[in-house]
Length: 429
Image (cartoon, rainbow, N blue to C red; front, side, top):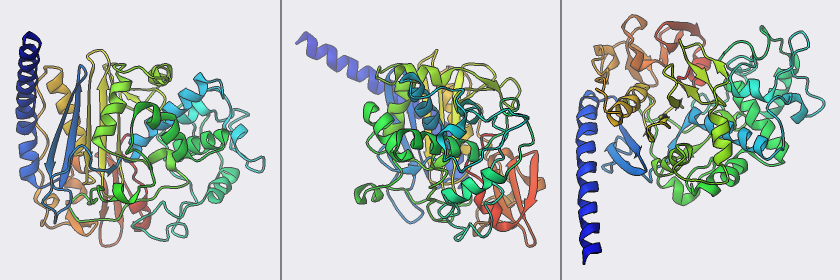
């Protein structure tokens, strides 16, 4: 009887804690939902081993169902931390070394660029210091057969052709420059070393030991029935992205249930054969372009040196993963709307878990950024002109004679419309 009473009392305490946390997250989210920015998203939380999952909005504009822990989303460049962990695991198993040149894992017919004899190593690729550009120069209109699914038809042969003819503009290992190409190449090289596909590496090497059954690239019919519809920044439905050659940079799909298992392992709350590799993947390796920021094996580390994070964005989804090992807390937000306000939300929830004041989300958008407003056309909807942009709406904006690509509020460049649709996998840089 005593044990039963104690169990009941413990359950009541946990329920009260969950209700209190949900009330705080609800208050944070309410202005966001009222703004009409996201269609739907799921917030997953780990707080000292306790799991919380809160769903908001809809699976699609026309659906009544709210997304939940089993809903599947494209996670974009959050995939990169899986690639970094694969590298660390192969190092721990002595299958390769961090300072191995990437050319050792490619066909002999491929020439990898170098700088004054300095070669590109696996570590350079994982720390975004390879000197390779964000995307290859031959990722061109000829390669993008379907702008709605821009990565689907870019081939390994095209990648090899680019590498063999590219000249570096800086010495590898010296300067941070975010590169989807670089981490995509890393994932490709690891697959070749293991003589298998990148997807098989992730599923067998990470998902199996951590019990993550819904993290993969190729969905079953049952999983596809749980896939949330993706939407552009202003809520218009868009096509899914199939990222093949650059799979290691952004191809994975997952659920909040699975991502909480991944967070739990990265916080050290659950030991597995990956524990040593996880620790190796977290070690800071190089400065980034953010003041005080560091990069580990694909993980970004905030200037306060305590929060590891990575975000991701595809054509219709945005994701954010953050964790703080010292306090044993972590947050993941998966959204079916390509909008970087998800990053603000995740960090605000991290503040709540830390007992700090949560910064209100920036949802006071100019009229042109709201659905139904007037301005530049953005994926079938509308967005404001660059002068009205806030940090929450970095992305692709299609003007009558050009496309403006904003990777950061202070970085605006004009490029062909087809390229602007294709070049965003995330907003990490």
